[in-house]
Image (cartoon, rainbow, N blue to C red; front, side):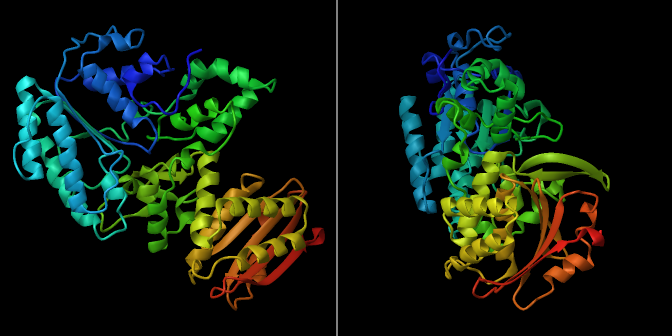
Length: 520
């Protein structure tokens, strides 16, 4: 078996190093077949964008020998060598527009040196335009831009974001100006900013982000998993039923869907790290970078996670590009891969989408990160509390549960606590999503309040949470008969009303009651 790597993203290095490569070159062939074409593709970080670009680069550099045995090798293609401009923002950690200009000038200088040329002009945009013109003397140019949006995302909540966007807009406009001199262009990123902003001058780009033909170009399908990794899976199963082991791998790392009718795919980096670790289940993808900008944005906008993830459907507009001064956190959650398409329905003549976390890896890690952001709890403390929560319910010990919740909320730092309902909504959303890892848990919205249900092998627990001097939690459960749908179940049913002080963040009231069989 060939070695697996999660750290080599260059196609040529991958092939020459004799690492395993899941053949995606049929997609590459479809991309390059037109005589001229320019593409844009948005995918989550660490999902194979850089490898895809380096594969395309090897094709346009005429390195046919690297592709022996792959789908593209015998395709009717002339393997002509083209001059390639490759702009990579992976290591771009600028904070101001001036720093960005300096970074881009450095990249252009290195590219010019590689072609034996000198940069001409004093302004960034002029230098880029002249460089494309000068390189085109050697043939039609191929342009790759990797992580085009990183300078924006890194600064999205800062006042400097607008100036950074202006620099990029002027810089990227040269790709449109040079259209007649191009053979091919491919731009990748995590997010998609509106055409009336960043891409207003790049209207020649074909956006394949939600194109069914390319929905599985990045990531691995179930069929690819079994074809390329089947022998490893059998070896790692350790005597366990292989089908059960595969189902667990799927639960952890599959679930990303990039078009409503497309097959789901596995995160390639997470899968590689899973195999590198000898089959140890862990949150590998999330560990490669935390979504701090998303947490800042969701808190700033009082974003309601429950209304968008795992319950209500959202219209297609949620997938649209956005403007920096009017950012919808849901759109960013979608584009960055923290939520994905689970199902669809047709309403009012259009497609509506049901969204949720793609898999267990993202559910556990992102929910723990919400607890860290909203409650000041470390991921370790958050997961430990939820495990204690689950144990109390599995044991049917509501007194123990109440004590655990009192300790948890009393420990929230005052400077982290935001005195409003959305803070508690974020905290309880994450608690119950994490709880679902251990027992069956679901949370939904009812009349603007949190309504949560947990089911264990022996009991059904219905929670209602209220703020401040509102003693109606238990009465609301009874009045609206939340328990009625479970009356045919043989398990014991408990209703629990919990009251919190929004200023201090403490638990100040608790009532629980068992629904007696005679009341059923």
